[in-house]
Image (cartoon, rainbow, N blue to C red):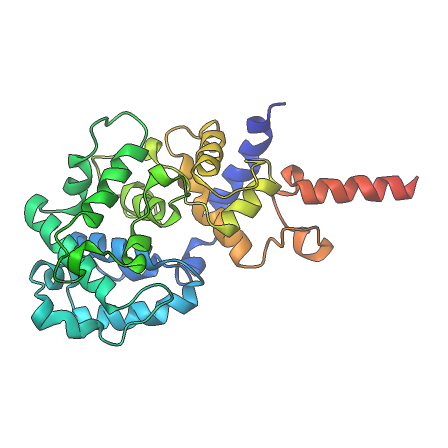
Amino acid sequence: MTAAQRLRQPLERLYREFDYGTRVELDAIRFPLRYTDPSDRELVGLLTACLAYGRVDLFSAELERVLAGMGPSPAAFVRGFDPRRDAGAFENFWYRFNRPRDLIAFCIAARDLLGRFGTLEKSFVAGDTDAGGAIGPALERFSRAFLDAELGEVFPRGRISRGYRHLFPLPSVGGPCKRLHLFLRWMVRREPPDFGLWTSVSPSRLIMPVDTHVENISRSIGLTRRRSRNWRMAEEITERLATIDAADPVKFDFALCHKRMSGACLDRRDARVCAPCGLKSVCRHWQRGAVRKGRHGR
């Protein structure tokens, strides 16, 4: 039996039976989910994904204040953004690498892109020169559009802050770009909990958003053996999931991530926690434990 054949049934079962409703309220996706207007959901989705580093409960408090300051329609706020008039909405913002000026720069860049293209989807598609190819080059151009925006009034002499650069990682640098892949998953996938707003991009081109939770559980069940969380690891995990569902390989992301976030996976064998887990048959921790137990029993 191939690795894909061993993984197919337990992963498909996890995807079908996972309690999405409960976990959505503990996930960053709950912020764009609040908005029914596609333009708000798209804009808030990007802002949320950009800030989604560290624990959800840590950045959530700051994001709540930011969204409150943007008013009932964040997209309208950004489209009409004037830093001299509106920057005060972010004056108390402070989250790890990011400061108020990073959000001001985000709003200016997004305002100009929306003014030029109408939607973030059209901005992305404008840089997607190979609609059937790898997503990396298009994502690179999308990030660069924000980094190369006219931000002189925020960053004099072109010295873009570390915090703003952190919001828009470049695939060419080799990192996993987890937050941008997360944003694409939200926008592109057609099934809940994702939104399916971007119809111009195929879900088959998406790459797994690999954070520490996905990294560890993927290693446990044989989706990767790589030790460094980088772009190549994300590609490898995606390639192996594509052997199970080539049309929608990242559909397993939410369930795999939250299985570990929830404490239902400890990245080690635990008789009580592991007992109900449907991934035991493909988990190296469980299998190694079973081998050791068998040896001791002889």
